[in-house]
Length: 441
Image 1 (cartoon, one colour):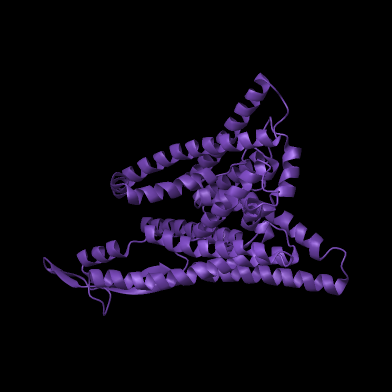
Image 2 (cartoon, rainbow, N blue to C red; image 1 turned 60 degrees about the vertical axis):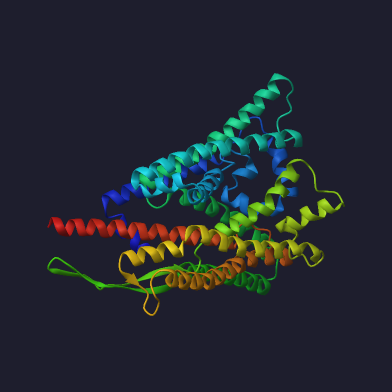
C-alpha cells in the first residue's frame, strides 16, 4: 500500500488527482463542523445522547454531522437511496434498461435522473426532519414569521448540504482518485474512529490496574485486527466458473478457443443488505425519537425498543434480542434480493451461447443458467451469513460489555472495500501511464 502511494506521487497526473481528492475531503470535514442556523444544537445533542443510542452507524456515515446537526447532516444518504432506486427501476422499466444499454450516452442520462431524484429525496427528508425538530422543540424558539423563516432555512440548508456532497463526490470521481461517493462515505466513518477509540479507552483501560489494562488493550486490538482480516478475506473471496470458447474460422484465420472464467464474488451484494436492514429497523425508531414517542410501557413502545440496536444482546432484557434475530434474517433476505436484481444468470448464459462459450460439462442455454443459479445460491448464502456475523460482533460487544461505539463491522466492510478499490484504481492508472510511456519510446 505505501509502496503504491509512493510510486503514485512520482507521476504528476496521479499526484495532482490525489492532492485534489485530499482538498475535497478537507472541505467535507469543514462542512461537517458548520452548524445549521435555526437549530438548537445543544438541545439536539442531548436528545441524541439520551435517545439515539442505536443510531451509531448512521452517525458514523455522516461523520458526526447528524449529532452536531451541521450543514452535511443528511450526508450522501439521499444519493445512495436514489442510486438504489434507479438500479431497481432499470430492471422494472424497459425504457431505463434501454438507456443503460445505450452506452456512455445512456448512462449519462441515468446519472442525470439520479441527481434530480437525489435532490427530491433530500428535500423530502429535510422537510420530514425539520417538522420532527419543530415538534420536538429542537429549533430555536421563535414564533410567527420568524419561526416559518427558521423552518425554511433549515430545510434548504439540509437539502443544499446533501446536494453539495453529491457534487463533491462526482468531482472526486472525475478529477480525483477512486469512487467519489464511496470515498466521501469512508472519510466520514474514519473521522469517527478516534472518538470511538477514546470511548473504548475510557471504558476498559483508563483507571484499571496495569495487567488488566494491558489485557483489555490486547483484546480490543486483537478483535479489531481479526475483523479487518476477516473482511479482507471476505471481500476477496470468489468462485471462478471456467468458461471455454469454441474455435471458429473467420476468413483464413482461426479465432476463439480461449479459456476464461466467470468470477462470482462471495460477498456479491457488498454492504447493501446491512444498510437496507438497518434502515428498515432504525427509521421508525428515529421518527419516534423525534416525536418523543416510544418511552411508554405499551406494546408499541416495546416493539420500538426491540428494533433499536442499543437494546440487543442485553443480558438484563433478553426479550429485545428478538430484534437482532429479525435483523440477521433481513440481512440474509436482502442479500438474496439484491443479488437477484443485479446478477442475471439467464442473460449471462444467453450471451455465452451467442459468443460460442460454454461451461465444461454443462450444456449451453438453460442448463447453464440453472447451473449458475445453483452455484450463486450457495455463494450468496455463505456471503450473507459472513456479512451477518460481521454485523453481529460489534452489536454483541456493545450489548454484553457496554462498548458503546459507532465503529462496527459494517464500517470495516466499507473502509476495507473502498481502500482496496481505490488502490486498484491507482495501480491501473499507473499501469496505463507505464504502457503509454513504453509505446512512446
